[in-house]
Length: 113
Image (cartoon, rainbow, N blue to C red):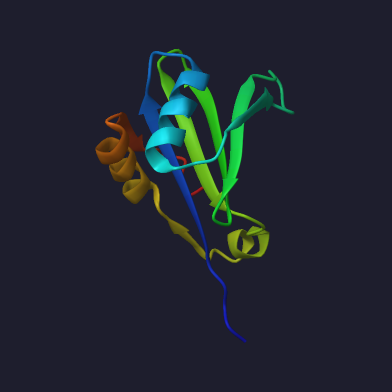
């Protein structure tokens, strides 16, 4: 039996503008289809952006007035998460966002959780 692996990344982006403004910039620069916005299902029910692309799910949410978290994870990777078979792409994604989008992005400490 072949073991399957998944991937995840968590990146912190310094951004003083609106969440929707950052989403537009990321969409244009990275070729992401529209990022949809809805209130989170968890308290305090802040607005969260989400999209699906290339077998991955993306979430975008504000963590402080000037920091936005972008989280990316392979779709349906529960088995891989529980088995510890997830690649952490946070360093790669932060570098991609810095060079392609000209944004201040750094790998987040919570990427492996």
